[in-house]
Length: 226
Image 1 (cartoon, one colour):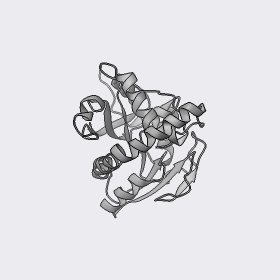
Image 2 (image 1 turned 60 degrees about the vertical axis):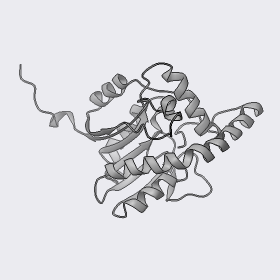
Image 3 (image 1 turned 180 degrees about the vertical axis):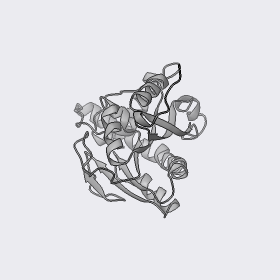
Image 4 (image 1 turned 120 degrees about the horizontal axis):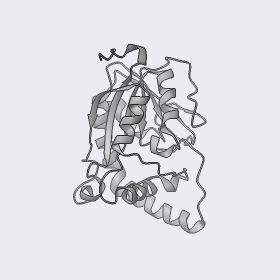
């Protein structure tokens, strides 16, 4: 997934290493990741939904989801639009979604929000264009979680030249943001099957989550009794 921020700057040495590791990632990890994530995501999208995938990359995961779910439609936006894409992809500035209000039923963020300096910006935009979100991201929890997530992020994204701010949140930070922005949790999953054993022992271990949430305005929340 492309980051919704500016491109990163890498030295030639880092760029060469990124290309090598990126090639290995494509061969050893990417196809399994696409298959597993598309299965989870397609099962969590409501029937007949109009979906916007933010930071969609080339749309490969979206194409597999559409093969599983012909009842839905998916468009994408990205700051780095690839020469060839599997779905219609629009350019955006990384913060403002280029669509009128209520254009979609669901906004999807697949390993995108940790590429932003403040995920709340895009979560607020999702309220405007859809009012429901499907998020795949990370929990920074457990021993060496930060360095592990940084390594995975670099291997999967550096060769595309995208920015890597490594802005990983703990589970409590995610939950606090959801409460502050009035996002109500509807379904959650922890996809620890993204990697085969023994890689899953290092790169799984509850570092990943998928959540579907719906925006509940403060005025719609039940009043608290004293």
